[in-house]
Length: 306
Image 1 (cartoon, rainbow, N blue to C red):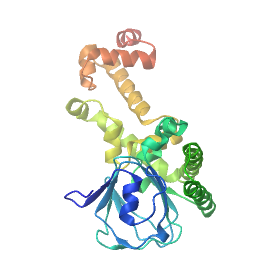
Image 2: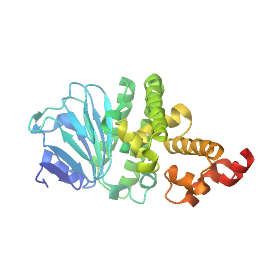
Image 3: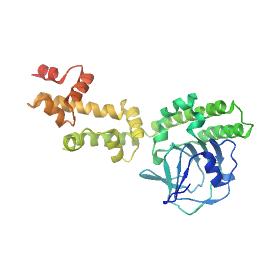
């Protein structure tokens, strides 16, 4: 189905297969070798109601926009999208001529529902990463990924039976576990770039608490900082967790508590007024957080400092 903006909405992998002209072995899951399909022209974009794991490599021309960013694939890259997300193509109307070894797995949530993969897939946060936060693979890693893609395709091309979902979900789970390992390797290799992100975040966080932003906008959110850094919230959190041992929310909470301590020690304002100055809508929320983080109420902390 195509909307007025020429974004094609595919509800199932089977619907996508019909558009690109390949055979469907199971309506809720598909493994595609793009070098084997007929040439077609880029739509403005795809909106898909299923998970996609796509391997892009070689001389593939696939300049895509996802969220706020675009990415030009020229190397071995894995991209993950989750149901309801939209990928737009900068080369709208141009021929899509995929190179060899460009593959995709497309799996509908109903296929994995009730399985261990269905229960665990929300833990693979890279499905919510931005396109420019994709996973870049070594040649050995590409071969591991391709091997799993091909095993899944072989299983689907056999007679579909009651064992098929269990076997296929096991392969997909193994693939995602490898991807988690590969992302860990990528984060380690990008330590210097990651520390630049940490420094940028810390400056934004510091500036937020030094300006009137607290009074005007209330307490900052993870999304607030991720948006200003052109990162997805989960990717920002993953970097901060790896490089500092604390996630984004913990960094924000620590800044709130340190600012609160300064105000409690130096200001004569009431605790309720300090809570409002810190962006809390209700003073009791401030008191609860402060005690959770310090083991004392704001009043007890102030009394100890007096």
